[in-house]
Length: 323
Ligand code: ADP
Ligand code: MG
Image (cartoon, rainbow, N blue to C red; front, side, top):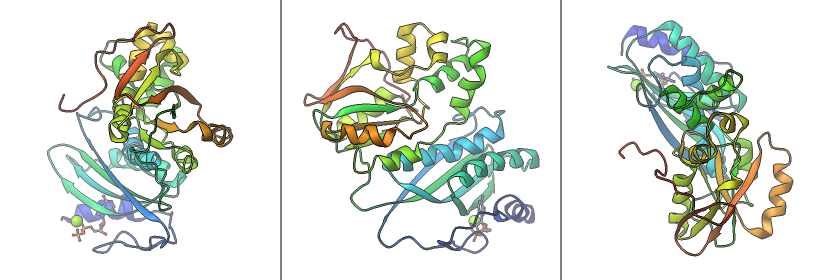
């Protein structure tokens, strides 16, 4: 590793104010030394963003920094875990001080809000920018929100308004037009997703299963159904569509985007009927809405149903990198 890389680490990553008491030794040695709480499970997750694949190479670096962390915190949220530490592997095609400044502003802006400390990483040079971020959090034993706990009769819920990020992507690819008044909102939903950390933690002991929506609601709900060996009936007219989505697309395309758009980072979760009132009381303090969109059924498969009882056709379930 070259001197300039040491300089980069010192300047951008080591000299941070946030110091968690459970970090015995942070950035600067061969390893970080951490003090996980003895009575909690450690939840660990990792996501990679590749320039040109997961973000446009010329995208706002502040948004990239935010999103690299947000997608990881979203996985912790979907598990009901409280975030604590992150590590960062950064491959840069060039050491651009302006880019790094802005990347760090986005990354640490979000990290500081959740008291998440960067404790180590690796910095290398490569042909294209690749950002790999690992997040570590805590969850009480037995209370993690897994994908395999949904049972027939459980309600299916979703946070926020899925489809907005899909709309932003459609606009970027020229297949949708967004009115001026909605453009900043829609772009924010794609570039600055808000991880549902508070909501995920509040669902411990209430939700029977949960997942975060990264590849589209229909596809990600499908993972819960598969792992729980159940099926579902999803009432498409109950989908919470944002005013921006409703204004930008015809109704069927809007519903399709909410079902299969991807990149939403909302939570999809199931709640047994006897705990529905508990959900109502915890959700009363949330910043985002939560909407019941369907019910778990014994027969395998996902049935998309309109209000009149007819089937809603969906050509593509969601995003698949190798599809
Ligand atoms: P080593 O040669 O032992 O792998 P490095 O020289 O790669 O160590 O890194 C020196 C220190 O800086 C280590 O503590 C490492 O965790 C930290 N570090 C390197 N890159 C980053 C980064 N992108 N973010 C946070 N910490 C980093
Ligand atoms: Mg190293």
